[in-house]
Amino acid sequence: MWQSILTNFGVGLISAAVLLLFEPRFRRVVTDTFNTATAGVKAEVQEAYRADLDERLGPLSERIDALYDAKLSEQHALATDLANDFTHDRVSHTLREADKAAALFGRSLRVQAENEPGKLHVSLELRTYYRPDAWFRQQRHGAVEEPDEDLMVVAHTQGGKHSSEVTWEPGADFSTVAIELATELNAKRARRLAQKIDWESVINRFENGIKVALDASHGTAGALNIDGALVEVAGPDSAPWYLTDAGLYYPARDWSLKSASFVTADTGRESGSPSFPDLDKPSWADPKEWEYMISRARSHNDIW
Image (tube, rainbow, N blue to C red):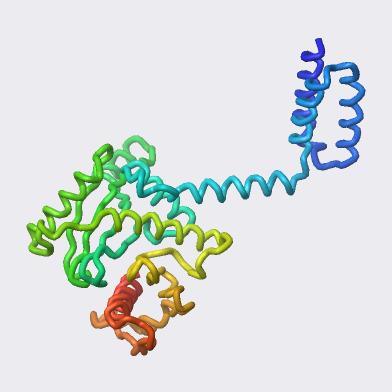
């Protein structure tokens, strides 16, 4: 009997919550009514329903804070342990959600794959496209179709002058993708098959790069002071460079350069010859790292 009474009481509270949830006076009335209605009920039953009542009538600020914390935890989990769960579905989902959070530029990320910058870099890219007949089907049936997606693994060699790419098919193990890419590079004489890529380091750099991008985008405690959506991470793991659509960043020295510094206002697009301002290399910067990152920054800003 008491269970029935308490159940009906709870349903009534839910119905009234929309109008009266934020009224402290109502909260006191409900509490008094609850105490009267449950007089004589077992203590453990009262406690269970009181906990449920407190949750329903909790302050709005607390419930909003809880939603903030839940969302941040959800975002943090995107890249957590990604290197040990490097599957098509997990990587695609991570790129997609990181892009929604404005953490990554164009649902892609490029990382360095060799000790020497410019020698070999690898990108994960989630590309969106529509099938050729999608427009005609839309005209005939009136329904807007969702675009298809391809998860691409792209290798950039010789300072970005050459590239090879492989489509990572759903369900395929990454080891298959890795050997296909190595074979493609060998066929283009960009990198010999015997020159094995250290994929463990590359995959860890993808995980770390996405974590840095998400933390910076959300402004979490301890996040690097990086603005914009992340494009590329290069340099040594102990002190990497970060290129975003907002600029170039070297957190190890608390140094940054905004994107407007890379290309002049008049990029010379009509003549096909973009104009690059002179930039002084900081005394502490490694010459090869500086040359590569400035080249990438100019190329990215000229394109976009």
